[in-house]
Figure 1 (cartoon, helix red, strand yellow):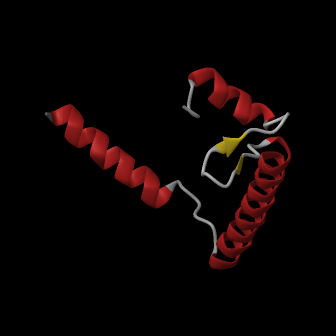
Figure 2 (cartoon, rainbow, N blue to C red):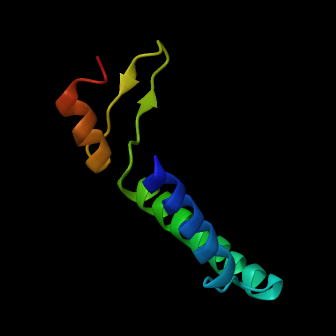
Figure 3 (spheres, rainbow, N blue to C red):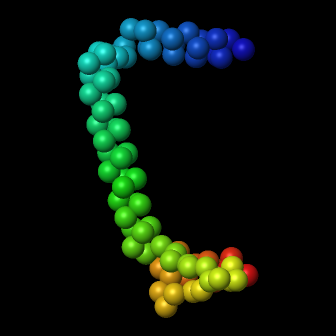
Length: 84
């Protein structure tokens, strides 16, 4: 039990005295960088999904009409039988 208490005390002391926390302006600029990178990453995934994604159209009776190329994801769905 003494080891656990000692660990908690040392961890608290290290967080208070040894860690250098970022300033508010540093935190804001880092957050903006993360936000911009996340948006770019999401847009690139959207473009890849649009190019290589599933292009299933539905006919008049509601039956799916499969195109010649349904993308990599479409091939995976065909493999696992998700269309049936």
